[in-house]
Length: 280
Ligand SMILES: [Fe+2]
Ligand SMILES: [Fe+2]
Image (cartoon, rainbow, N blue to C red; front, side):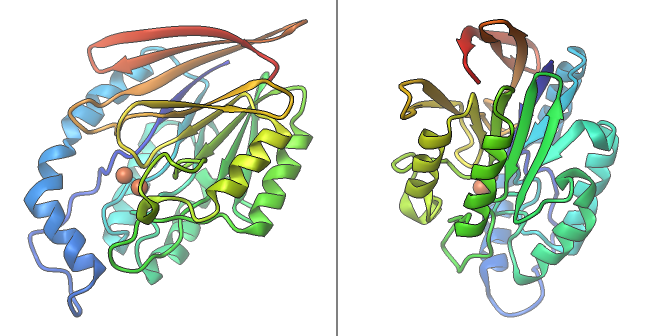
């Protein structure tokens, strides 16, 4: 089974007009987009990366959010059309980011328009099986105040995640989440409010791999599970930034467990091949 992890494309352009309403979180983000971020997130880079990934004929696409900038109705429509042409819906599992669930109006629209790719999340956890692997997407995006890019899963969704991890034992379990899933990986104002609880849960239940976004660069942090196994926590770079990358991951099962091969894909090259055995 082969899948691609792609995150933080920030692909929706903003218009040259000030957003309506009083100065707000959307105004500040609009300013930041016009001054800085539109030069950073380049659509051509994203398109080239997608083409490079397509050449490897992945079985699935794992997307961990921040397709938008400010989660307006127009942006969510642009992202919806992009998702529709990426791959058949059953091959995509998506979890949103803080820039998708940006305002009070965004949550409802994301749930409505992206339901096909969120695969009917129950308590913000969506599960999808691909051969020997189970992809489990956990939604960490919440509407935040100005200056905050934090996330939260909440007790109910953590319980659901625990149940999903137990149900998927015997397969290679991949957790997808937008925010870093353990404390100390980013500033508190950008962090998951319940990252310590999530890290405890992952250590207790085990997982083969956790893939996340939000940090915009390739990062690796290892979590030690209570059974002594290592759970790699991997952030992939923004898919449209100057160091844009995607991860190409192959999972094969044998009698002893799973062989995982991971490569870092750029639009014109492949690098950083890593292979390891995992109990899943
Ligand atoms: Fe982002
Ligand atoms: Fe983010």
